Image (tube, rainbow, N blue to C red; front, side, top):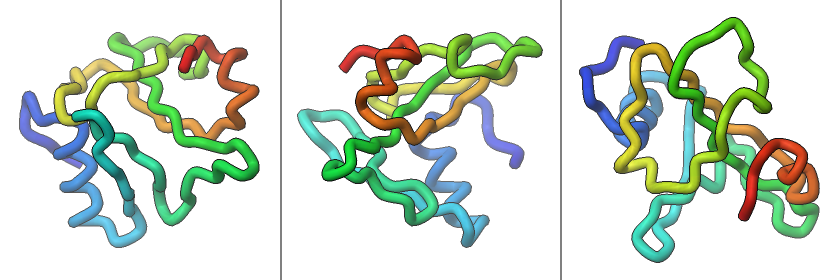
Length: 104
């Protein structure tokens, strides 16, 4: 998908949702930040402890593991991906998050 330079992650996700019927996301705004709680009809499951977490890696490399990426805790309306970076949403159990460098 070709996107304009300086597009935010939130706007890129909205474009993707518009052009690809298989991609859907749901979000809510809490205390001024956008939180994604469902991707492709897979929602957070608070009863079982599974949640979506966004990880980013600013520079491209051969390693694409979660251990090489950082948990993003900001607002996706303010995050502008760079062309060499990687962005991934992981669906983790809350207890697993600590093993992947995240702190809530």
